[in-house]
Image (cartoon, rainbow, N blue to C red; front, side, top):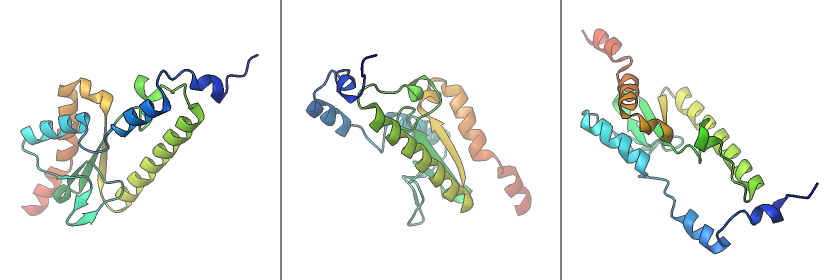
Length: 160
């Protein structure tokens, strides 16, 4: 059986290393299209939030995309590929440099889980919205509103 290690897998990439590096450098970490979709949806519903992990001048673990400080809730908007979601896109494994990508995506998944635990231990409720969930905007909007309003009735009762 022929060896299909890194030398053969490198040929699977149609771009030169310089082209691939340039492409990868253009991938954003903040203000991504999926994040903007979620922000617009929530803003249209009247929700206000802080961006990228700030809460009263403090940085939260993982820099959540949206912070609802008064509700003690945060939302991450994750790309399926980059955060290794259990969907078709997230499970796709690049053939070029496969070991690197497997290790990188595993570290990302572990880091995400650790940051989620830190937030929950500090009393924050956490929702992760996956890029693939943006296809059904109605279901997404329902999920977001349910997350943000859950527990609101209990707070209203305590005030009265």
